Length: 110
Image (cartoon, rainbow, N blue to C red; front, side, top):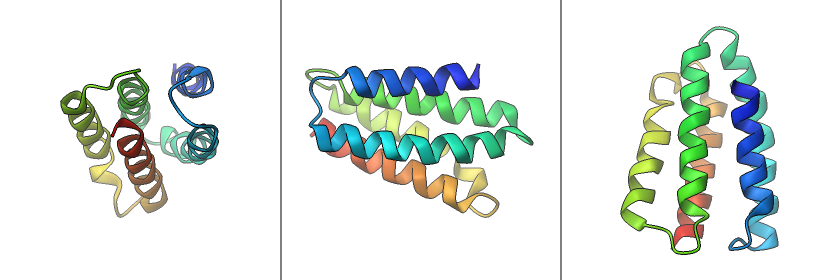
């Protein structure tokens, strides 16, 4: 299920016509980092790993709408960040990737 969620995020990004080529490229690179970090987390915290992936998927979907709902985007990005809160010490790279994805999605939604 985790693998499927990451793949759906990738397709959402690649198929999106509202993002610039650079935004798509940046997000795909970040998604590669997220995939690595989340696979590592999945070994010990599978529910949390899936939650992070699903929150990321929701945020990508909201940000990539033709006309994003900025309030909904703000809430989905907050949820994405909250899903990693307990991993700041044990998985700082994961938290950094999520924060960078969040900032990139926020910039797309503006």
